[in-house]
Image 1 (cartoon, rainbow, N blue to C red):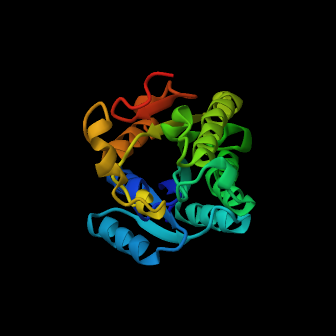
Image 2: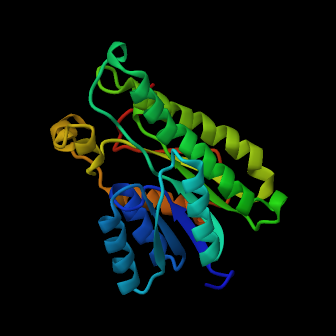
Length: 254
């Protein structure tokens, strides 16, 4: 690939919101690095789908808990062209538990994936995009969650707390690199129809909660993806440090 090719790296890009973002990025003419942790079949299928539609994508296996894997992802982006965007989408939930039932292992995994992984990916993105390092600018979009305001009692306070850390990181990093051509924003989805609910042991959660939501329905991965694409685009050129709720009205009140 030519270095003039603009590249966006999406962590956890093989399914759900991540996959929707990858499709939308490819539609903008940018090359996309589809990172996946374990589901190679989904990642390969997505890359093939993007290629068939005339886009450019590569799948790269990597666990955001491992620094070496993160470096490998960014090397793949460098091989494609010039990094202009990072979507910190990789994340995990766990089964419903109270805090007084949580193990150290659960907490370590929760924060390693959802917080430390996002920090390390942001570090590598800034090193490539910031004018301080000779870069030409770019955008970072972090995936937060409406749970950071709701606290998720009796479900996963640890996940909500990890996403609260993402809110704070978004604001702090945005201010650090505001003069260096890098914009940092976050999207906080509400209840979205994706596979993440099944991984937390409640596959029907989106449908179950839909009647209780202000809009009486769950959101779609593509509705979140469109907001992310806007934040990555030049249309959002004066937007940094913003946290955009894409939650159908959920968690508007403090």
